Image 1: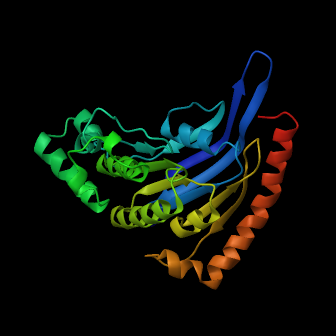
Image 2 (image 1 turned 60 degrees about the horizontal axis):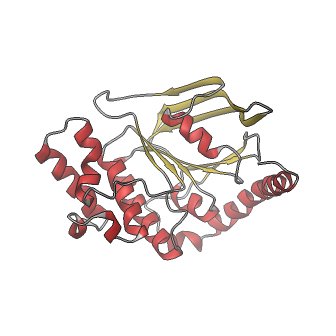
Length: 267
């Protein structure tokens, strides 16, 4: 991680969704800096604006107020790639063609994009499934295709919105380790949304805890645990336990606020 440069900076970021009858403030005065090569995790209660923030960073949503800066080091590469929680691969395309898709859109020659796609399929343990179609695969395998496609497109910044949230525990653990292995080899700036404190501590360099709606930054914590990380050894370390408790103390109040707000008619 290059600690001297910023890849992302958000200044006084506010997002208001307007309807005919009301306004909903999803984000309010968010100030955030993400270092070049950093793995940043966003934690917060449901409805706190995490996904809205990610969509603004991806250019899929426009902020109401404030500014966002994303630094491009190589204009020949895509600036961002997004991995969503749901299945976003094309069921009518073979696995290999799904992974190649972003490269094909950029006009990368067929032989080169095939080599790149096979590289990431191999890293995700999917090389032998390259000529199958997504409906023939499990949910965990489909999500591995999503991750492989994002890395294959070689973006400057990787944005991930709970990519493993719908998976069972076993597949989630496997994909967490595979993601770490690929990320450590790439050094890509990554912003990763999760509801899991465990997942944030395993993956992240820093963890941003957000408040209940409207989403603000409540705390930013340095994980400070050495890489590469092993999920079994890291969970048994005293530092993991200490950080877990600290993060939960920040989160608990916000989760209760979000529950009370929902129970009183909020959305």
